[in-house]
Length: 316
Image (tube, rainbow, N blue to C red):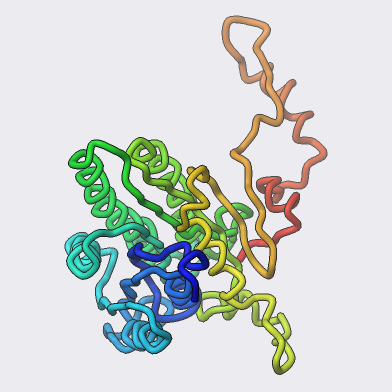
């Protein structure tokens, strides 16, 4: 394959949660585009994070990349553990000389309605998703900042984070997951502002794909016929991750993109839909009642962010 067709040639990448599903597809795509990959996966069999750690999923994906002629190493580690996340970033630096791309994908589910959710179910999901994203981003940003300062010039750095339509449209049985995914969007935009001067971009995707994490969500959707690509296959998501990780996406920073089944939607930041000014020095209850109650009178009580409706999407 000619080098010009390998936009990630000479670059190194970490993909977390890469032993299965979306992470696996993303790791394979980055390798196909020329990147050397650290395949991270804690390997627990339960989608709720239950079961013992297992290196097999990460090792199998790394072996698949090597068998196709690429470079890959497996890492068994919990990215929600601060020290293990640091060791993951250090492995990429030690093995490939530097880190260029970080794809945060690892996650678990502990679904429950808000009135039934336990403290542990809340804490565990926030820890894996939100803290896990923070941990790897922290150590990667330290690496890129140090390199940039030593070189006296911006360096190459790409972060692709994973949020969800559960954040965009709400998800009644996933208050912990939706909150974590919303936090990841905030982390992404903050990181984009902080690291832009060092040459690093930070973007976030809301993917929709049929994986073990979403087997309940898509249980009613028909499977594809033999030989046909599943519209919900993770392979529809991976090319966008490859693009965001590439030099071509140098001007894409702090963006939120929804992706599934051959569609990519760029989501704008929230806009003000209405504005009211007090006629006095400060609002009173009576004035707010007179202004806001009519404004919401014709809206259904369960209406959520308009973005999901505009895109024709349901949460996933």
